[in-house]
Image 1 (cartoon, one colour):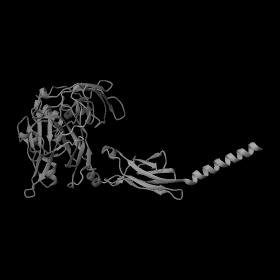
Image 2 (tube, helix red, strand yellow):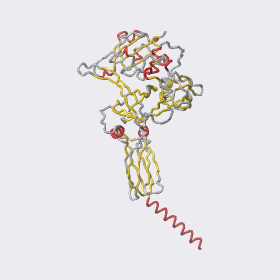
Image 3 (tube, helix red, strand yellow):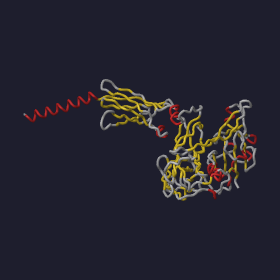
Length: 461
């Protein structure tokens, strides 16, 4: 009898405790909104931390496709709630923290939003008012030799810009540049750079220049681009600015890289062309999709992967002297190709190769990339190049800037064939085109520049 009575008392106590816990449990739900794009954020991570407890307990929930999140059971009390997303992660910003009280009486609701563009830009550029269409590029410059911040390093930034003469309605293009200096903590901030345009970035320090890399300020209005600089792998500043820099000036070092190239479904891709831009390093992947590169300079560089039938991929890599950096690239198939017979040719265009290595402005197509377009006429090629269009057909076809068309005019681009300027696009047959350089918004060879862009064509030799 005593055991039975004791069991009844224990069960009663457990039931009472569970009822008390259930009675004190509440619910929290809401929607996560991207304040910049004014749309829900699918997959956002929401964290709720119970305050006033020791230790503090944090639980998390994932927003669904409509941006809705839900904590079905939380103990009553006060919570600090924050949201993380890919956007905030890219900006290296933890996001705002909101407080909410959860009780058992009724579900608590808390809608969350990422910071607005104005808020992010105010944090990046305190006290500054940025003009519409501009943003901020911020980051830290680090020495590869010491792995410490590099105060006093200069970050040079350049971009192309179009201007419209309101009187003549002519479109002109040119290059703009900015230069900022890293502070005592190695941090730099460039405020007022254009949004939605590729920026060319280079670290300069002690009369030396690092590799040229790219940066992009998206809709958030702020981008973080951390950079590293190797004094051993850098080139003299004046040499880096020469447009005719050849292989003898390409930097080398004792850094190395190894990695693999896969398709989006994880299958290895053989024969992919791998290059580290701004260096002489190049190779192709083996049958397992593996590659390795040596004698590389340390610092921030860009790795490029190209393969017939796949979209080219570029990504930044941080290399360190005496170390091997691992990298995995995934290529997405661009188009489904019929059987193509590719005949290897050695390009004999030193100007094309030099500018493709060092220029970050133009689009460059070699013979393999041109072959996969199956051109009927050379003017067909223009439709695959951003920033240009074709007016007319046959011998009278003209290459014009798409920006000028938007303004109601037709501004002719400068078509250069084997060094001869002012040519017609169909003066050369499609079967004879071996390489193309496209500069719709400036940044091309100075001797060829015109307001509405330059198209440089090299024929087979």
